[in-house]
Amino acid sequence: MLSDCHMHTRFSLDSDAEPEEMIKSGIEKGLDAVCITDHEDHDYISEGNEWTFDVEQYFACMSELREKYCGRIPVRIGAEIGLQPHLREYYRNYVRQKPFDFVIGSVHLIKSRDPYYKEFFEERSDAAAYEETFEETYENIRNVEDFDVLGHLDYVTRYGRHRAEEYSYARFSDLIDQILKYLIEHGKGIELNTAGLKYGLPYAHPHTDVLKRYRELGGEIITVGADAHKPEHVAYDFHKVPEILKSCGFRYYTEFVQRKTLFKKL
Image (cartoon, rainbow, N blue to C red; front, side):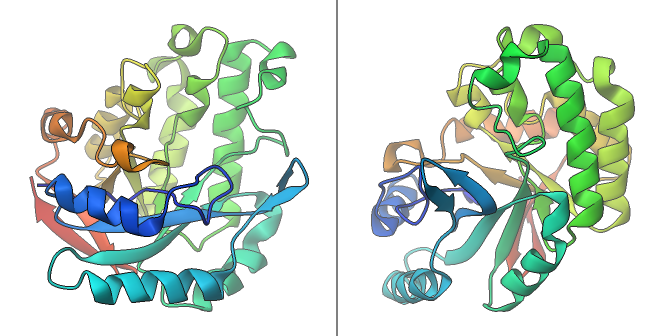
């Protein structure tokens, strides 16, 4: 079975889930391990709240649960950091203050605006928004170093007015290749995020053509996560994952323990 390396709990603004319930769901679904990766989106404020959590409380809670479920399922402690070009020093200090197992670097804001909100697409076509997102993603990964994998690479396509209609790897290949090559050259990976399927897209994030290209370019580090915010969404559609990865040229997937890669055969 696989490990779910991307999930959120009540430590994230967009989840009410108890960490223990997410762990129990992972056990019920026969996972090899779980990694909880709550949002640390510094300098992102919505409705008066910043997308951050108290790291001391977080580690106290997760460490207790890791001990409680020792022998039943490995519980790993991670974070999903929101990449913005000016946050290089903030995240460098942040990830070094505690012994995180895994850090996802994700792009949730484009020029300080979240494409989750429909207003983002009222000012531009879907294709223009996607192009701007990939440009911003490249700028982010060049400026913020302290993450292990890039999260949900084509996340923005969930929210476009026409969603996948104006998106393909071929259409944005120059920008996407730039991102993939930089990640590979700097020892970082990507994730296969099944939330794309949950949101009704015909692909997980990123699109299979992007996964194939990543592998062609020599990319090997790929984690798997459902981006669950509720226990019922842990390991969402994971039965599809081995075939997706194998069809794209992968024979292994990756977990992280103490920020070090662990390759697991599919």
